[in-house]
Amino acid sequence: MKNTLEIKNITCSYAKKPVVENFSLKIKEGEHIALTGENGRGKTTILKTAAGLLRPDEGSVRIFGIEVNNESKQESSKRYLPKLSFVFQNPSLQIIGSTPFEDLIFGLKNLNIKRKEAETRAEKQLIDLEITHLKNVATFSLSGGEAQLVAFAGAIITRPKLLFLDEPTSMLDEEHKIKITNSIDCLKQEGTAILSVSHDAHLLNCADEVICL
Image (cartoon, rainbow, N blue to C red):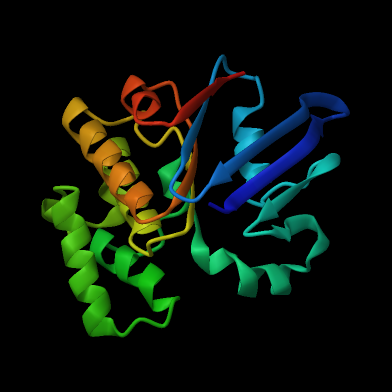
């Protein structure tokens, strides 16, 4: 089984102070690895560096065998970004559509999926996460937990091959935490590799490996 993500000896600093030192990790197709531990230990920094959102001071990151930092933004966008999704800790950072339904369709349109098929897939995604009642609600009026569910739905509707999750269940009730973990299990069966950051037992229990920093 191939490595979808390979992090090798990365070191990351803020204001010249290292927050991550000599960290390495490999994730294969269909594998879920979770990072946990006290705040300030560099978990989100590792996640963003792994996704190519931050550049390490030292070390390398390979996604689908491609070294991220050696490519231009244009090259990397063509090669791996369509296969990658990220759920941020603050869901408002990634919700673009005026309603949850339009937000889900927006992500599919970027993959050149026709409107009719996009609508069908968006409807199914809302049903799967039991948030059909939010379909036409203005996104600016969503609660924190509702926004978190919409952001998660938007990230997985494209069926990514690599998924990054930053505390995706922190504002959810027990029922919807289980919905999230069930969705993660389905993605793993489809071959999606997942790197998550969480303190939630539901998410940690569904991981193949938990790394405490």
